[in-house]
Length: 240
Image 1 (cartoon, rainbow, N blue to C red):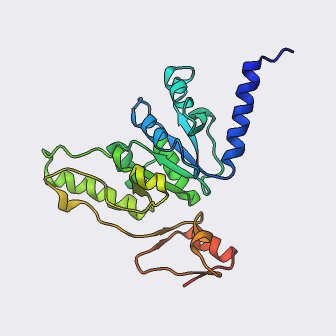
Image 2 (tube, rainbow, N blue to C red):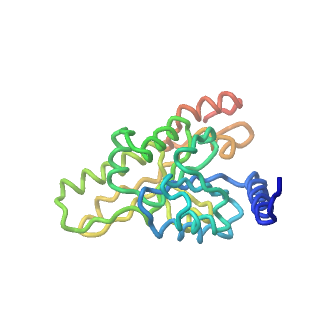
Image 3 (spheres, helix red, strand yellow):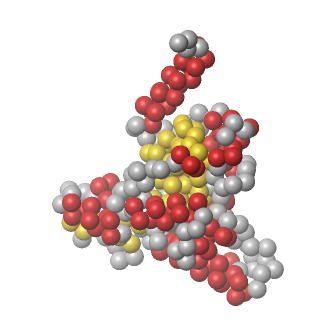
């Protein structure tokens, strides 16, 4: 059997990427059905990052298309996974990142409806105690023509997903690793409706990093997931 030099080179590069990724935090970047330039922009932002190992999850019908090639060309994209092949068993240790958030995804997540690929992934991640991040730039803005009742309902959905432990951050916060919950960006005339949460979410994946000398100090506004409590108990870490 003859193995071409091009195939060997591609195989070696893939292995090196995977080995390098072992020392970095894995990110599953979830792409929607339609192509968006924000996917490339995010990979550009993370190109020089030494903290993350990005696995891009794309629709099956992108296979062999220009979209797949463009994403694979970025050094920060260490692996491209098709939806039908994605069955991650490491959601607890990884980050699930959504560069684009539609109102449909937002509302169904808030209402615990998981009838699409994206919302099913989110539900699985929540149940596993994993981290979920919505990129601030991917949140749709209000036009300013909506009725107050509509705006209030949408903002209530944001508050609800924040309570679930989902984080909202900018490119800069993600790149620097300084991620925390904050308000989604919306436009006038309802800036006062933006939720201003600064609660710290303690999940099973960050119990060890937040603890010191076997003690994890919890503030009154902190949210501790059940899986985090179980993991702390398993590790003999006291929540105080």
